[in-house]
Image 1 (tube, rainbow over the protein chains, first blue to last red):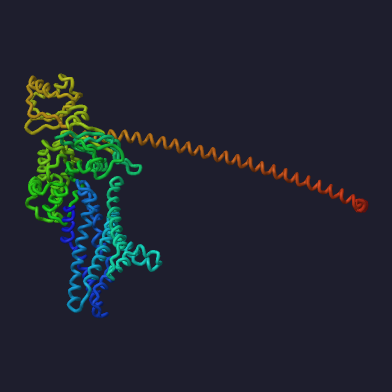
Image 2: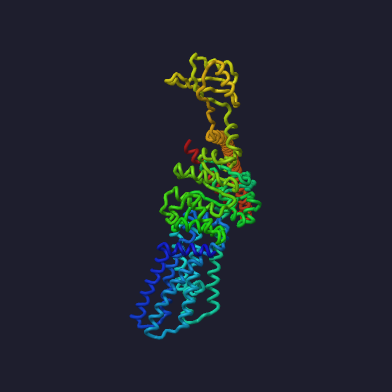
Length: 226
Length: 409
């Protein structure tokens, strides 16, 4: 797994992909930050992430779309799948590499907290809860993006599929309250109020595990279909 | 050792590989020959566990690839078709990653990577990104990835495609050097290469194995008669008489007369035995000097073409037969259809007749009913004493008619 993580991190950070992801993410976050401070005169760190959770919809696919599609298209899939590594370790390796890039990005957002605490007194506990929630949300999104990437050899199809499903999860609650169950963004909002509930953590973790598992199954099943 | 037992790979109704059986023994270099789409890569992908066979068993060094995939994969170095590489890594990083994937322990890894790079002649470019390399170098990087860590079994899918002649020779020498302690399976469609490197050749066509043998045997099996090229210094023009002295010679053809009074002939024989000794002694008797004599080599190429073509003819026959049968079946079906149509029409006619009959009967019945009704009515009317009136009326009309008739007359 470590070998895969190392190599994937290299591909993220030696190619523009990683920097586009981090750059885009921080650019939009900074815009939100600017608006929060100067428009609403607020020293609220959490609001930033409530807004920020929506842009995950468009940014996560940048990170995930190439995961398996690129390997499949270039044929390098043959190299990893004929190696003595298990499919599980390959999938987890790729997942954690993307997660690490995500965590690096989140660490960058701490600078907003630093700026805010220079001017006011934002609550540390709420900030931690928010960051935890945001991390869980982004991991859940990454797992789905990875799953979409394992389905097709076309990166664009993978990213469109990912964005489509995320937007569905985002907007469906506005159609009917029933769809609240599917909205991960709504579940994240509780974290930003400083509420960490077990049911929400379980939802995020089980969502993530489900799609990691589905990715493994897809790769295993494709052996006999190919 | 690789054992392939009754392996079939099916895509829908299409057989990519059909019921193949073969063995590659330890320390053997085996060539896998076949035209494009014959099933070479599919078979190799199945041996390396990239795809699963629909049926059959693949056993590598005693382990079933299906039951113990990781143990099998750890022993195999695979160079896939089309040289897939991670384009954002350097050569050294790529080979190192392959070594890591193959679970080579950290202590040995560096050495293994350097050895693989050295063996494939990549030292000069080891720090270049693989995407910037020429095709030949990419091929070598792929090969380095396969041989890193000295796996016992090497499976190389077209390893010398796209290399320049010098590189081809180098890679061939490298593959030959694996002979002692590796089992190697090479696919190729360059036949001279196979005949140079391999001890055994497996020829596959349309998913089925059509020959497993040594290159020499394949060549001699498929060539029925030997032809000889000979250049002689024949002052007395006696060379043609040799034909009468050696039975096996069926024909001697003069190819050309050279400026130095030597002549070049082609001798066609009717056997596949070597008769060069006899020719030599005969020429010596007749005072003919032989400057050059060689068996025209029936190459593996011609053997391959013959095998495949024979099969093609056969399959063409099969196809014809199948088409014929299909046509017959179609005709039968048409016949059936026509008969059915006829019967349908007959039935329809019958039904119509029956309907008409029924209609007639219904009409008859209706008439009878009416009659009965009428008679019933009449009876009723009779009871009400209206019959006389009727009778009167009828009498009157009768009278009128009679009058009219009388008037007319």
